[in-house]
Length: 540
Image (cartoon, rainbow, N blue to C red):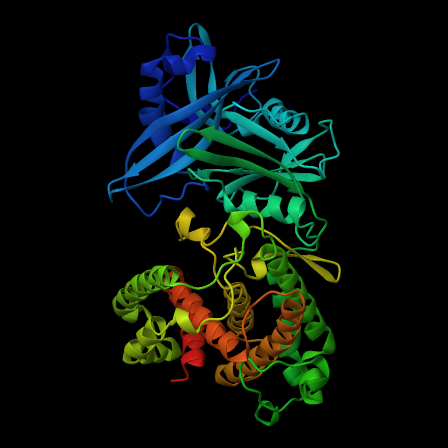
């Protein structure tokens, strides 16, 4: 098959060994990691080092896995950067002759012994994808192996039927098998089990939590220094897209209603932030404006969130998941982390003022004027006053991590915050940190709707922001009522009202400061959203 990319390669790399012995050849490893990979990797979607300067790539480990037809290698790479840090990546590699080639994703033309062909990413080979599925489906618990396949109790299919890629390649590569399962191959890897694998398997196999895609299998690498998760397989949940898309559609309807129903924004009844609201306590004017169904959906999401936290916090046997109290060590960890992040955001905002105008600029100046107040709030975390418990949490909980399934929701992607180290992602934290993440996501959906539809609603932007802030408080109130009631009835210790409010305020502020860095670096106009969130919480 003639390949789209074939003409772009000028060099064919020649090696004396046959492909089945490629990694016994030091010369191959040297050329593969420098001349070949350095050109290939920097253009991949899953490569996370684009903002840094690549120094060199080293092959730190590899394993061989063979099918009846082919030999494949799983290669672990250490990418070193001039900024004095490194990242690890996983890349499965295949060698295909010209007549076997059935993919456009070529790493490089190569010749092994006297055979010409191409080095390719093995995931683009149907034979390799089948090999992975077969190994998971037929795996038995066997000790002493380097490459460990695990079959989950929910995997009923024994036979490979089909495979295809799911959507565009992101930081990981997802493969749909038999139109029933998704295998997520982790491209960026850590010498530690991946939290997504750990939590997914725990929720399905230990806790039988229903509202997450069921764990069906995994691929791990057992190394002397620790386990590395290479793949996680789960059930494919039928869905109508993610809750972010759903919420944007809902918000558009809500803002449309302002003019359609001739609603006077100034006359709408106010409510204080974090006030718990039963549905029948939401004023009729608000129900008339927003619609009952959105509040009911928010309640369902709150229920599923509380059930997730009850499941994550109710195991007394597995130390990785046993709830724990607050202590001085946690406080030191938290404050160091947040003060470092806060200082980083201060530097970014001071260097970004020239990119801002209007409300974003005003809010940025207010943020700088109140920096001591915000910093003090982070320092004021007193663990001795905390009576609630810390548990393993989702860690990066927002509307994009939730699938809409009819009237219900499925929660997914437990990898944690991308900016955090793998160790930090496994630290037990207040479950209210996830709730705060979801509240920030609500705030984003409101403001994104206003920004993206500037000409659609016949109101001044400031009036829309005012309506949006009011809407936010009612959504938060409805969510909290359901969440707190369910959490407490499920014996999840989240503290009493004063502590709940303190933790929510603390965690929302932390999230908004975290978001500020992203917005100022990538889309300064949207810096209004975290800046407004910080202003709302701090009340300056």
